[in-house]
Amino acid sequence: MTHDTPAHPDDPSQTGPGTDPLELINELPEELQDDGVQSQRYTLSKDSNHRLDKYLQNRIKGFSRHQIQRLISLGGVTVNDKKPKASTKLRKGDVVDVLIPPRPAVDLSPEPIPLEVLHEEDGFIVINKQAGLIVHPARSHLSGTLLNALAYHFQDSESRSPGALSEVGKEHARPGVIHRLDKNTTGVIIVAKQDEQHWKLAKQFEDRTNLKVYLAVVHGCPDPPGGVINEPIGKHPTIREAMAVRHDSTSRDSVTIYRVRERYKGYSLVELELKTGRTHQIRVNMSYIGYPLVGDIIYGGEPVGTPEVLSPSRPAASRPHLTYARDKQEGQRMEAEAAERDDMLMATPALHAAMLRMHHPETKETMTFTAPVHGPMGNLIAELRKRPEAGDVVTEGVYLDLGTAID
Image (cartoon, rainbow, N blue to C red; front, side, top):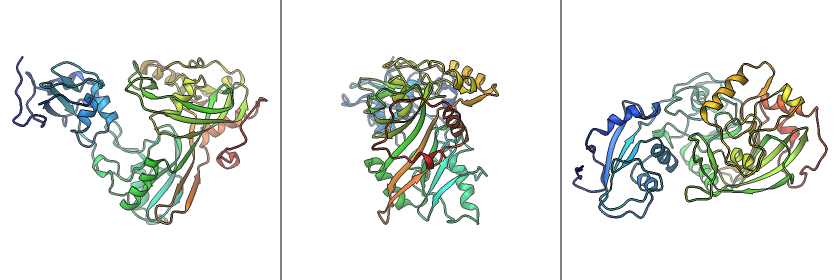
């Protein structure tokens, strides 16, 4: 088959190979089946020194490398009419066709979603995020997000510091977003209200000059009770929705410090300090050493209700050094079963961003925000505390005052 080469190689062209590449949309997952999908083609004029994912990241503005990798895995990219890997090396004459999904709308509709505000001033706002709340709109969640809630909060004349979100990230429907928490991860999150402060706060996260400390309830009790997990993380080799420890070119460094703070029969409360910020880092790291988070169905944790507190079961990911992950169908089945139970305490990951220590972007003053755990996780800990277990815990070098974070 012959291919049309654009006048300027390596520049995008709307011409597709053979049949119109947009016909491929019907074969892709629903998130790529959108009328706004654009087709672009690149023809290489020379060998590339980069992998396919890096090559495309340099050419498709506004998409992260992770997003490019996901687009490749979903079948939205072909090289010479064949489905490639993210690591594919490109050669002179290769024809790369890309289906680029539309970006979400940038207008945020105010929605009266309750928020627990920990701190607010002219430049930023700090929230104790509840479970089930996505941070910003995405293709499958255009409403019901933290940003929709903040849009409503800022139009409230009774707000202590009326304002709006910073413009940074607005073109990607992420105005003000400096960092994110997973949908079901609760706790401290900071959102910028002014552009200059946005950049200064984002720099702290980028340079790791701030401190992020989490609390998690895990199955079992890590031995020793404190340590460092230093294992690289990348996409799971078979489960699309999951990450995994991988020792290959697709992974990135991942370092988590853990400290057991309380021990119960069959479970423990762990303080975790992040030294890197990888997707699902804590969940993958704890599963990898054989102590998955309670309720973390994807990574081999189990939903826990009253019967499981009284008689702890062995979680699926109790064996260390496995790249364990449940597939989507099995996970949905377990979630549905947990939702039908009246005795359920925790069916989502028992993970809480308990503390953020940072420097004020203007005064440089050290600021520490501690977010108390929300109801479900607090109720779980209260029940587990009725069944304490003797053993070593970490008391030196800890950051969290459990009385503030839990009680």
